[in-house]
Length: 480
Image 1 (cartoon, rainbow, N blue to C red):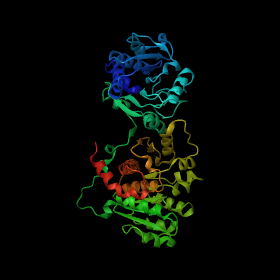
Image 2: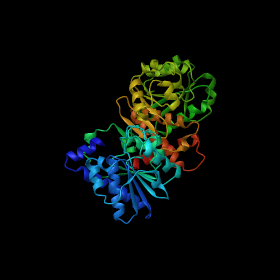
Image 3: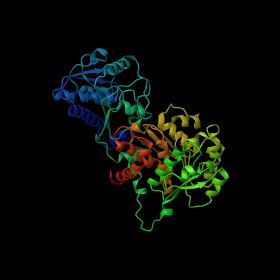
Image 4: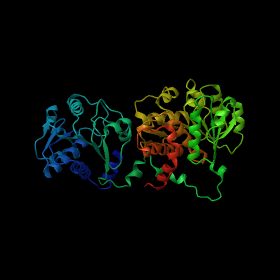
């Protein structure tokens, strides 16, 4: 945003015009959503506070009873914030908890997305009181204390009913803490030219079908099942449902064929299950490696129900050596937890790792949380050479070259056993069709989330998800 603001100002748009537009947008959001009521506007010492001064003025001119408080001294304001303060001709109170007495609507314009230190002192006390009393809060840019890049809370941050941000959303809005604290997010145009995007050169996007749907469109009448790819799933003798869910999801996602490679002891289980799954025997890694000598087996999924141990490790190394499209989930990740470098040194080609937080910590013990989830996923992708899909309500997909997609198109209903197996199967099915690991991960995360959203009632279990994939695909092809 700093680059975007600078681009606009260099192009002849005054900073105060941007600030005026921002404050007007916040005031408009307040007036659209609530009837006229007392308002307290809390302003900080920077440009976020300047936006608050404009918001207060516009609401006052519209007849709203407004009080304004400033953290710091008026004389210390600089630049556009000082100009905005000069347009407010009413009293400026010092920041205090007493301002929150009664039941005012509170406009939080204390600190913006670039805050770099924990909030303490009177500002911290005011935010604590906001949360204790569950007051209605409208935050400007971000809830004060939420870091715009990392999404981490710096000490504390209010829980807003809505947040009004400008030009483009920030990664922090879509972090787990951001999702908890931003309320309804409104991203508004304040006059920054669209050409600023090229100047910013973003490397991260909010997940949406526009990023990947063209890669899914296949209308060739000459297609046959092998043209749609052949996904091979290394299954184990236990947790057989995991591999079956993954295989079914891979087929629903469009793979032409899906084979389950299983130890002899579990053959009857898989053979008696879904009739569309092919089943072959693979008691050990050497047998699995021989299966991959068939070049038509162009994608491999290892992890769901494969078991932790030497057979799984050997299967992973065989798949990587064959340079197939590879998805490594669950047991495949845990099998290398004690020696991650052995795995990383073997990675080549299109490889996707799909850890949850516990698996991530075991696989990447040296990757800390200081920079937030996006930074952790980026670092892990760089270290491993694989695309990393780090699961959660704010699923982050990071490519080794630094590109990132954040997926929040999902539902808390996905917290059910087997859900991750379906996700891995969708990703494997898409890679079988030729998608890169990064594109397949982004598409799989969105489609998986959409299945849960469209179920739209209590009681979702993993078995419900595969049959919803066609509807999710249909929406992906049609949504803007």
